[in-house]
Every structure is written in C-alpha cells, then in structure tokens.
Image (cartoon, rainbow over all chains, first blue to last red; front, side, top):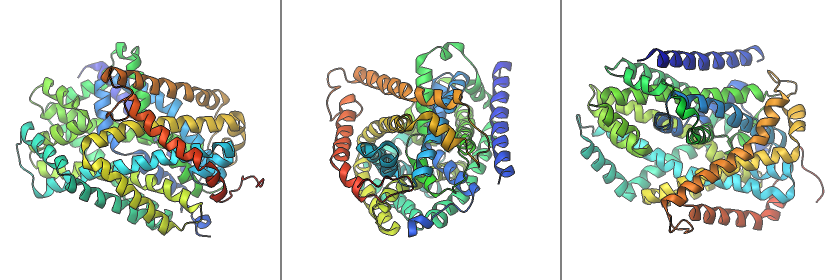
Length: 31
Length: 494
C-alpha cells in the first residue's frame, strides 16, 4: 500500500469517526 | 386518536430508526462497486462533499416538512406548498411505494442466499456454478415470489405494531447488530492475505477522476440513493418527533452514519475481493459485474473458497437482508401514514399497503428485467422527489425555514445562511443535471428506441411511468385535499 493511500485511509476513517463522535456527544449533552 | 399519540420514545430511538432507514443494500453492495469504478479515494472526496451539500440539506428540509405539518407526504405538501401542489406529495409517496415493492424482491434475493449459505453451501465453487445457481433462482419466478412474500410480511409485522413497539424496537436491535457485523467483517477481510491491494484500490487518489464529471455525478447519485434523502422517509419519521427536536445535528448524524456504514461495507467487500481473487484482473472484473453479479455470483464464489466460508457467507447475507429490512420499514410507513391521515387505522393501512406492495412487487419478482426496469424508473423518481422537496422549501421561503424552523430552541447548533440557502437553491440544479445525464446516457444505450415505454432502461419508460403517476395525482388532487385530515398549519379555507 502506498503512503498516499495510507494517509487518505487514515484521514477518511479518523475524520468520519471524529465527526460522528462529536455529533453524538452533542446529542448526549443536550439530552 | 391513535395517530396523534404515536411518538418516538427518545431522541436516540428516532436517530437509530433514521440510521436504519439510511443504511440499506445501497451501502453494502452499491458503494463498494461505484467507489472502485470511480477512482477510489477521489470518489470518496466527491461523495463526502455530495453528502454535505445535497443529502444533509435535503434531510433537513424533509424533517422541517414532517415536523411542522405532522402529516404524511400528501398532507405535508398540501400544507407546505398549497392545495394546488398536493399531487407532488402523492408523487413522493407513490415513488416510495413503487420502490418498496421491488426493494422487497432485492431483500428476497439476500434472504435466499442466506438460507443457501446455511443449508446448501458447496465449498470451492467456480463462477460457472455460482452463475448457474443465480440463474436457476431468478429463473424460478414462483420461488422468488415466495421469498418476496416472506420479506414484505416481515416488514408488515413490524410496521403493524406501530412506531415505538414495532419500528423503533426492531431498529434498536438490528442497527447496532448491523454495525457490529460490518465492523467484524471489515476487520476479518483486512486480515486476509492480499487484502492491502484492495485498500490501495479503495483509498488511492487519482486527480484525473476529480476533474471528471462522471465521478461527481456518480457521487451525487450514490449520496441520494444511499442516505434516502428525498425519498419522503424523514417527512414521515419526523411526524413522530418531539416539538423541540433538533434538526441540524440529527440530519448530520444520518448523513455521516450512513457514509460510515458504506465505508465499512467498502472496507469489507473490496479487500475481500482482492484477497480472494487469483489475480487483480479477476478482482476488477468482479467489482465491475453490477450489483447482482458482484454479490450473488462473484462474492458468493469467492466466499466459497474461504475456510468456514458457509458461516461468513451466512453472516454477510444476513447483514444484507437486515440492512434491507430496516429500510423497508419507512418505505411501508410512508404509505401507511398517508392512509392514516385519511382516517384509516394503522392496522388496516399497514395490511393494505403491504398487500398492494406484494402484488405490485410480483411484477419485479417475476423477471429480473422487470426489476431492473423498476429500479431504473423509480431510482430516477426519487431524484425528482428530492427536487419537489427542495421546491417546497423554496416556495415556503428558504430563509424563513432556516430561521423559524431549523435554527430554533432545541437545536444543537445553528446552520448558516451561506450553507443551507445555497444548498437548497443548488439542489434543483444538481437534480436536473443528474436526470439529464442519465437520460443522455440512456439514449446512447437505445439509440433507436429511446422513446419506447417498453424498454428496460430508457427515457421512454421513465416518462411513461412518471406520466401515469402524475396524471393520477393531478386527477385525485382535490380528493386528497378533502380527505387528508388537517394538521397544525392547515388553512381553514374550505
């Protein structure tokens, strides 16, 4: 696997999980 | 009255049901194939942007319609756009009903392969064998109809029990289970020898694809089909939310959660296909074999070459069937809600919608060409539904919707004018471009008979079937206005 593809994979996965976690955190906070 | 008392038990219950609606077969088999065919990482960038500027604003618009009117698609268009436009709500509901009728057939295929994996799994099959199994199954129309009956029956049983005891309860079981299975399968697939070639294929960025219009059109189509934006589901699901329910964050969770589901499916299917294929050429051939070919011929064959392939295969097809089932619930509920608004009880409405859906779905179950035709026509229909929803917001006043309905007490955060207003005005342009692009493509497929209503995938069949629905909707416009009960914003002018 090339470095570019590896970086893209990390950015995509971390980005999506972080965004989802943040939105879920707001739901819990304002419950 | 029964319908007025129904409400999601909690915000989490609503979000989970909405995620179940979003995550369907479109995530599990369509995303990996389309992503691989359109440049992998480049496609992921375009598709993420499409989710943010098309799917999420449309979901917000649907939620505004449903929450404000507290009526199904027909009533919400009547109250939001005016009585001359009630037929548009009928169109949205009719598209959803037609989608439900053939979607249960697709689910039937998944259930059949789930049972095949358990009862009659043959190790080390070749593609000739799996092609014969597939052709043998779809060639036996009565068997497909029997599985179709089981699938619509499952959906009927759940929706019959109502929003909280039926849809919410089952989504709370199936959606987390779906995520657990997808995560487990993604980990397993990436531990297979040779799977890194699939990851390379999925995440490498080729700038040429980012400057290709086909990549962007496919990204928007995938975002529309996968999230369920513009289908009318969220209009109906939002009838049951609390008065101070948040709109922006809920819709963002739906968009992001749906994309995570698709990425997990991609992380399962693409590396598994590369790891199990004897060569890169065969892996590419499998990914290019269409939804059914990839899943029921190539993937099934590749699974048969694995140790404990029957178990993995059963889990995979269970996952597909569960994803389809949680999307069938809102498809049924859209029709049920509009009938309930006309004074019919939930039980009678559910039985009526499911019986009609079963009969109409038999057309798609009878021959795969019929199913492909329905998929083509009503897949296009949901883009038009999205257009109608955005027009409803534009007619009501985009800024008014943003300030008075979205950015209100109870919202986790506010959306900016630059974002919501721009996106809502962009949606009609995007839909016209997408539909136009598909029509131009289809003229190339049928240069001599593009106008014929009886081809499988051409412009004529789309326009013919749309015309039937629109004529019925226009003909019954006054009837719908009169029969549909009044909601909180209905006008007392008749």
